[in-house]
Length: 197
Image (cartoon, rainbow, N blue to C red; front, side, top):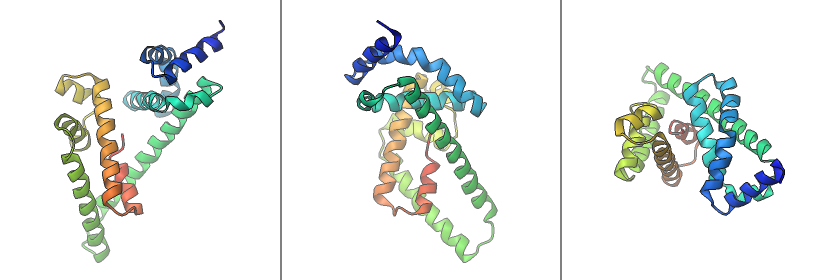
């Protein structure tokens, strides 16, 4: 059996939901994908986060793998897309924080923006309060205390993988809640980016 045939067999097993096969593929590519991402981010933690997101998304969308001819190309394309998303999120965060920081004058426009921000913040907080206790704690430690995944894992005495999974599920719920309970304005889109991984 050639390497390509062996990989195709693994992918077929992954499509069926076999975690052991996924672990084999994960082990085979994690280091090379990490090195690829690190070339651009120059950040160990950011690179680790993106790599984990890549493999989480591949597992969640494993049914679509049946249409993929070259897994390696697909994997690197996923990594590239998530890396670009992270860059865009960082740029958006900076714009929002600069706007809030510079908006010291109580102009009508500035006051209005602060009220809108406060309303969306409250909606997001309502969503966070609906999360299971442990998931809520992890989301708050990440978004309010700005702790890294490693710091959260250490403080709660759980694995980083569990933190990542709980955070992903929590933030996914918060974003869905925001979209359901708030108008889909540009400001909402910017605000949601604050809660991205």
